[in-house]
Image (cartoon, rainbow, N blue to C red; front, side):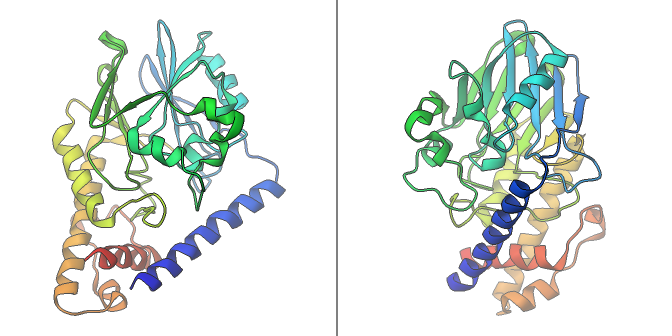
Length: 310
């Protein structure tokens, strides 16, 4: 089973690097625009007609009296573009950057900001950024040599609070999932949350999980989502990692149910002695979760990852 999953992982990695190579040859897409979520919160989004990956993950812009906090910094090369877009919102500088995890499309332009910025991550994400060798989508080469000064100085374990009053930002880590260092970023006064890639987009169904290099877990992903639903309150607007616009809290709750229902079906198939292929073919999307697509290739990938941990 491990060999099957390694091959699947290599295939996924090959697709990622093929896309990266194509991007290097083609004109770089522009950040599509700025969407306002609340008086203080904005999102730099991708073209709604694109695959939601053109510039990398969604960047949240949180405007405070003391400066600007960003959540995630897209693919390398977009630093100045992010700064230019922030300047359209406020004259205040970027003072704080939170990375939801280490992947190249969420921390790619960290080193394009002043090194006076306070970079904040979960402690496991710092460990990933500090790795001696990088693999797959892990972004750690950027933080070697002179780039080491951009390694985050502020880390946390389970929960961390930045700022106070209406500016307060809460960071939550509920366990392994997409990687072993995923952060949910909550803006209480805006009633909003950035999920990073724990909730990637409405149109992708089952998410990519970095089980090979990011210490992610297909099984723990479901439990982590449930802990987030139970542990976070006062949120009505959710910024997924790659969706081209925000969604409702109920969509996040529904995604949690959709994912965990898949795990229940997989566990039943595993107990019945079915193979990965048989389990994938047996999987059915319940009517209550019909808003989420389940392409056969995504189902097989998700089932395979789960089987590899059972």
